[in-house]
Image 1: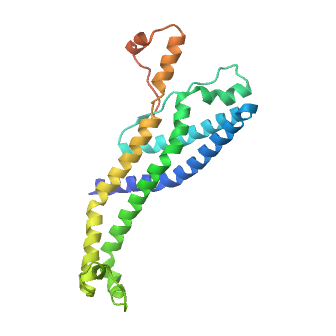
Image 2: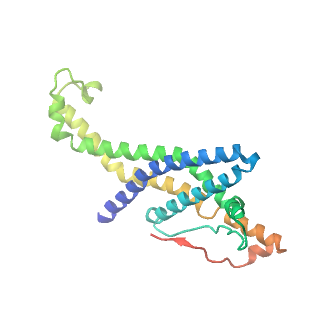
Length: 235
């Protein structure tokens, strides 16, 4: 039981925090990308795009830190190609543009918002339904006794009896409470699944392959080589 309560709490916290973070990230990503692309012809947009990608990386790292609690295992952090040691200020500003994962982080900040809205609404709806229904016997008699008040039972054609109204609303609350763990867990896995797919190394193999091919090694030889360990976030 304690494990179930802890799991529900973890998933609920993850989903409720997801929407505010997604809204902020979406606004910043869209604004930065639009401003950068619009001014790239005068070169001002290039460092703006670089700054936007660095900001996207920060949001991506924050999401990666929350994933282990939800998934139950560590997640890998992709390798971002660093700027050359003798690079100047401008080169360092635009370095994120050379990392495929940086663009994936930016894309995630944009496409994550609709998913976060859906999972947030499901979380709030199920918690509200469960709490409202289970506590309805405490205050429902007052609401059912208000003259000309059309309760749920009356709207569904079961009469205007206060007892029927309280029993029916409570039963619906019980249904929400029973299904709450499954719905919250499913929503959290959908949200975390998108994050894991886009933020934990999708672009990294292609970046490595590109580096090795440029150095003269074939993709086949690269595929047969043992992989270097990657940094990982743990719970």
